Amino acid sequence: MIHAQHDPALVVHLVRQLPLRYTAGADHAFDRPAHVRAGSGLAWVGERLAVVQDDANFIALVDPTTGLADCVVLPAGADGVRQFDTGRGNKKQKFDLEALVSIDEPDGPMLLAIGSGSSKKRERVLTVRRAGEADETLALIAAPGLYEALQEATDFSGSDMNLEGAVLIGDVLRLFGRGNGEATKHRVPLDATCDVHWPSVRAYLAQPEHVAPPKPTRLQQYALGEANGIRLSFTDATVAWGDRSDRPLILYTAAAEGSPDSRRDGEVAGSAIGVLDPRGDATVMRYALLRDPHGALLPLKVEGIACGRADSRQVYVVLDLDDPDAPSLLCELRLDGPWPQPNAPA
Image 1: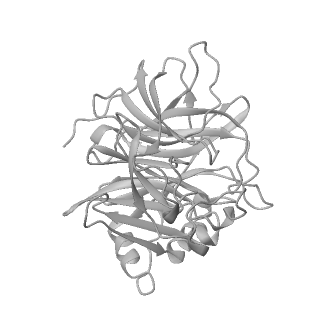
Image 2: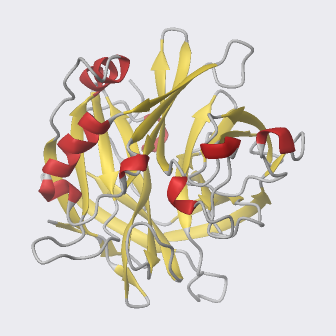
């Protein structure tokens, strides 16, 4: 178990926040609202930030200077709908895409979005090539074999698996599991990571009925601290500012949410930005809680993170308000204090 330490010297400043809205407005033919209604993962595609949504079948391609977004339309659910919530009575049908990572391919970046695995309907993986281009292609792949392998690794999955983040380190896809599920007689919820061999995952996704998925390795558990007495749990992660080493610096987000299990929302006490630094003899894990200018905890749910491009102090996060009628917010943050700096790119 690696224990994260709250470090009061680490400071997170909110520079600005932008509501996320589609440039073209609403499109009722595709069951798309005028705004980006959720934000569960964040990754760069060219000069834009891709935002994956756990309860709407769209990926938003966001201009980080304006908050305006173009749209990648994902396959519809039952009855042709692409929005899922309690009010519609169809929340259990959502794809629940939670983790998003951009992978360099010979023909450009490929977006890989990964379902949470918190139910059978959420055991899917999405790939999008050339997102936003005229020759954009996407595939939504049922991946029960991969999720079965992850579930069987109980020191990763815990009592109630809920994948929330992913990073690519060389040929390794590192998955981040959120421990906000229910405890059972035999298992407790875990915040944990595991590694899977990315070329083997790619081969499995190309032929899931004929190729065996890789087994997870390097299982690691974490205690992430708390906010207002509620335990923090992973919501996303990213490799810091192009760190190309085999032991890169990783930034992560975590939320303290009083949810009864991995499928239901709860009251949010606060969120944290943290750093995993494995570069010494032992991994160092520190975090800062998001506070207002008066020092009070901000009751915000940070769900996605991407490093900025201005310098190694700029970070973008996306806030999920858990309100289908309100746009998610893209926030530009500045990290001050003794945050560790990444290795130089290779």
